[in-house]
Image (cartoon, rainbow over all chains, first blue to last red; front, top):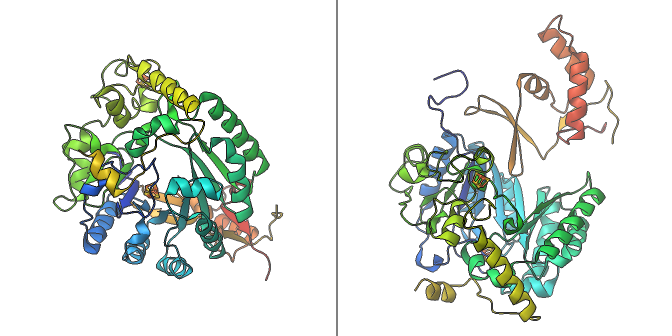
Amino acid sequence: MNADGFTSKNLPKPLWLCAELTYSCPLQCPYCSNPVDFAWQKDTLSTEDWIRVLRQARRLGAVQLGFSGGEPLLRRDLETLVSEGRKLGYYTNLITSAYGLTEARIKALKEAGLDHIQISFQAGVKELNDFMAGTEVFEHKVASARLVKQYGYEVVLNFVIYRDNIDHIDVMLEMAAEIGADQVELANVQYYGWAFLNRDRLLPTKEQVERAEQIAHEYQEKFKGRMRVLFVVPDYYEERPKACMNGWGNLFLTIAPDGTALPCQAARQLPGLEFPNVRNHSVEWIWNESPAFNRFRGFDWMREPCRSCPERFKDFGGCRCQAYLLTGDPANTDPVCSLSPHHDLVLAAIASARASAQQHSDKGKIVFRNVRNSVRAAH
Amino acid sequence: MAQLDDASVLALSPKFRLQWEEAQNCYVLLYAEGMIKLNKSASEILTLVDGKRSLGAIIEELKSRFPGAPIESDVKEFIQVAHERGWVHVKEPS
Ligand code: SF4
Ligand code: SF4
């Protein structure tokens, strides 16, 4: 025991616990961050397992709890888990496509103590939204968002941004304001998982990104004090990588539907790491002791140019998954960084996406996230 | 923005939750996907914001807890900022 906390070690705390309740989802977004081979992973955690995880993580200092997936509403015990989470003192967030979000459920979740609902949109208009979702869901999303507002929740709308919708963020923002959203996130696709497969088809051009950013700023002014507007840039156009997860094993703990504990949702694909499972280990051991959570923690694992770079304390060398996907080695500098010897890979990806944008004035090849494509991609 | 004076009855905004965090050893304000850690004086003030006390009553209470300390302007300044950030709002007289 010491004066400034209950731990004696100076380890970071998993303030954010992301509970991926299931990989099942009725939607088929081609940018989904779930693993490409999700069809082979089973949802094996029981209600009791999840409750144990919530308790153990809370004891370790977790305070934000996100229920996500897949589509978390598919779990019938969601209300039970929300209620347990709330009792434990978590701030409880539901991250949903709104598929299956009925008024009865909005009410039941409110009674269970849910604090906040985030609804994701594929676009600001029905046609494109439903094309990308692979199912008719736009109107239901809008209606659900209104209901969520009516029930007194904080309403956060999350629009995923890619080449075909980035020129229309004004439409999204006007719609969000009309619904009365408290916050809008314009989140450019991050290129992992399914999005990586579809990168040529999804990555906007630099001009598109710059224009969108400017429009987002105009709307930030316009809605000041009424609705917060966040614009998350696609890191491919940056000179420096994002501080991915605020550092490996530093803030975020994700539990996958089969109980695998991950430092981020995409980490599962990284080679040479054995991610522990909450069915065999305590959250405390996983977070503090497991080799996987310590592999890229801190700064000792770094190679040059990160190792001696003064910016390493700010960006932690970027994203391990991106380093792996692009360079084949997760211990390399994130190639988004212009100091990376592999930065040309990012430039090549941008050029390739631009060429593909010019080729297909219409819809190019796109791989939707569904069981059939998952089974195929994993072989 | 509703005006703020000694008679204003203050309440915590429903979008924020104030709670003691054992692991942080401090009070925090929780909100959608975020957390603000509060220092000692901010905690002393915010734990008195209960939807019943007026700003004046909060100042009186703190004066009695910390006799002799010149706190009035600090409290007012803090509440002003907390109000601007949407943590607290002025309760309409019902
Ligand atoms: S991104 Fe789309 S497909 Fe993936 S879980 Fe979310 S709603 Fe489902
Ligand atoms: S070299 Fe590494 S630490 Fe330095 S800016 Fe690039 S990614 Fe960050």
